[in-house]
Length: 324
Ligand code: GDP
Image (tube, rainbow, N blue to C red):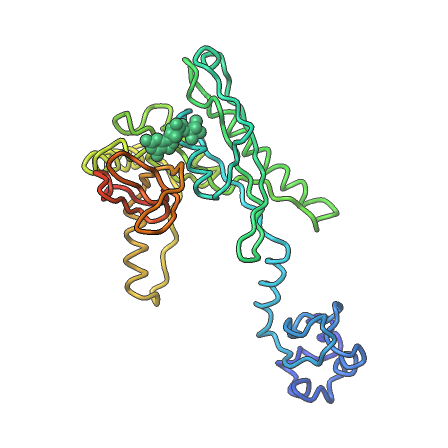
């Protein structure tokens, strides 16, 4: 737009002579001289014809969303997810089932003796995933050792330091000269696993979430929800919500949906908000359910189906919400 503005034309939308005839506008002959919309095209050229050498069917700022979309899809997205919570709560199982990948192939499990002396580590697993042409560079940040020691005082500190370092790094990169290929390693979301075996939050959970809620979006989840009955899940969720309020923990809040959304969507949105903290079950196998092959968890009495929140003949089914 700046180029055209400098020549006294505020773009095709403001200059009736550009579309469709490209006459009378000082910028127009330049377009024809290139024989179409090449890579050096001004920003309002139609992306449908860009780079094809064909004539531009439409020039106008209405194509800007398409250009942004095309550019983002080409570049791909970065997403960094942190999973935190004590060992054995099903973090790796859930991550693998969420992204249909095996992120923890080289994981070394420690025995009980080694765990006593283990300090909190921060490990990163990076995987490039592609779905329907959209590329995602997924980074999973794990916190092995968190909550495993006998003395867990301040074990959130290495995690907080790591998050701060990523912010600093990004700030430095953004202030640098070459900003084109910045890699965004900031932690976008932290799924915090709460043990189903306690009575609400433990002091460690409160300490962790209070230390980190200003730094990262925290999504608390009730782990291994299949070990509880529906009544217990509801009771536990209420207790956790009360404690989150009581301790002033600011967990991730879903954005309000627009008032012009349809009723069904609004109800879904409301139900989702009310199910926080999500009760989750990690799937570890591919099972056959009603003639379909789905990821799920198999029990002698039935199956929990992945992504559906459904369970056939499973006693905990109504209490299970969110992703399996
Ligand atoms: P992590 O140490 O937190 O990463 O936990 P893992 O993902 O390694 O899981 C530890 C054990 O718990 C494994 O034997 C899993 O099969 C099991 N597990 C994971 N998720 C669930 C779940 O939702 N329900 C049940 N019952 N077991 C689970």
